[in-house]
Length: 535
Image (cartoon, rainbow, N blue to C red; front, side, top):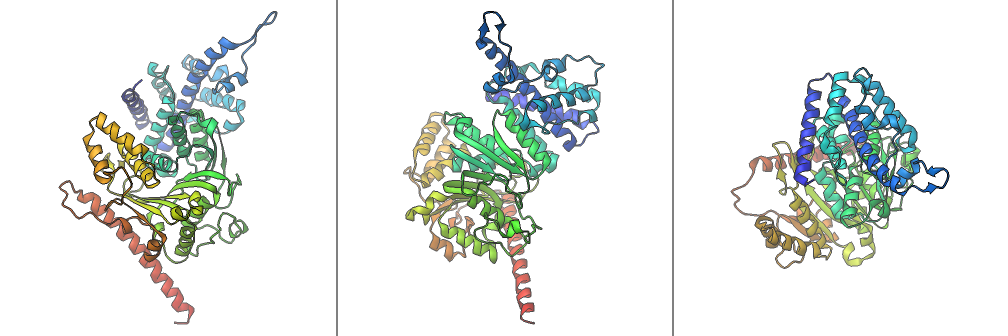
């Protein structure tokens, strides 16, 4: 099946399932998790059937007892889930119309959970809330013959597609569990997680892990042979989504439920090769009087004074890394310039030499909010290299995007590759750049070829006005320890007939909002100081 055929299949399945939901009494949230469970079940059955055929070929034969019966471990070795007979797709499809389909599906999920400790309590069991006719039609939708022999990770892609669409429709509060693929893939491309321990302490639906697996597989390896996944997630529903997503993709990982501000279940401080996350921004109300917070080994630069958790997360990501570890994470744009105690913490982090790349992302990349964001990247291997420790790549991508709709932007595959190539050039590696140039020439993609070669004509890194600049710590200090790329890369002074005023005004509006917030914080601090001296 080609990529275009898979996209068409995804769209057809989604439209059919979404039309059913629109004509039911269920909300998007009530509908989403059970539908994802049906995709899981359909995929598990496909893998079961394929594994069963392969296992049958290799089963030992005893002279008197005959062929050894298949066992659950046979399926585990084949990286498939053993399905009890009552939980198999063909059994469910063949049920008589008189059956209580909702309760049957609930029991099918319970039977699978009973076989696998990691899935215990994870699978949806609320199908009794669905109208019988709705469930029957859903089963028919996912009984499509096109799903019988899907290659590779195509089912995983369908699962991700549905996650994406449910996020856009507002299910599970949208962005709370789903990081847009453009941001996930950009993070993975820049930190290149290809070995060791990979940790996400705000794991959501485990999208970072799935993309990491894709990255490892594109290098010609199996993710299970190269990386070990650890995750932590605050909410029960998101923890279940993550575990189910991992299972659909055939990935193993230890994902535990816990509030990362107070619980550190994996105890991975100083041990991670890679950390990646999209934590909740600007969280208020963290109880800093708790001993677990006051004495937290993950906060080596201290507690910020203000009621905002951004600089707790930033320190966590740094502290989890081992001496050569890399981190990439999404953060509110305001954190890059935050003042007072947050600026002092930022200064200390900058002084370590670990801040590797800072990326500004434009607005409309998230489904639930339109604000821009920043991507931060740490590389602790830089700390021991005097030259690299004094360098940080500032990359302003607010003008790099594809306009999907008036409310949504993303990156094209070419833009992903170009961004990755720029970072590699900064790190002294021009192999991806050279490959892209040859690929663009071969495919006659003159637009991307010109974009890349006009900015880096010699195939080496160079500062590009309005796009990127390598700065040292002295320059950062001179800019009040700001880590906002726009302060450094400058602005291209030219007439652009394709100038998008809507986008530009959106960026200006967002920047004004951030400045107003900083002004209010400064005014409040001044008032507090005046009151402190009796004025």
